[in-house]
Amino acid sequence: MISNFPKWFKREYKKWCRSQPGEEDFLAFCDLLGHPPYKILSWLHGESVPQGPEVLSIAGLFGTEIYDTLDLPKPE
Image (cartoon, rainbow, N blue to C red; front, side, top):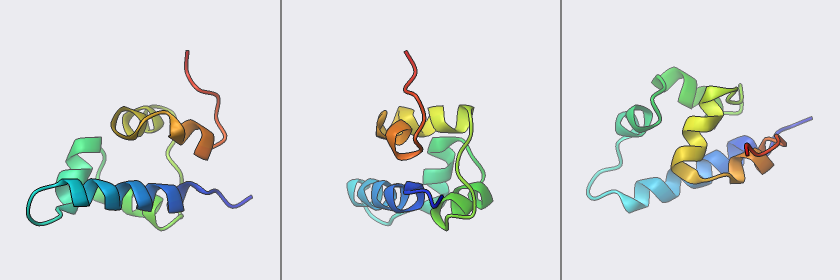
């Protein structure tokens, strides 16, 4: 099954970029999520999807919609 995650994550990333003053900064985005650039890129390109604590860090930034996107149960 193809995940909707890459499309959703790209949309959220673009929204984040627009909300930042000045230049968009991919490395700042990676730092904010606390994951290395290669991992973020693999998510953006649909090569992998976040697992476990990675999902939690994304939810902390973009909200619990990620759980629906990944078809995961929302945490209590």
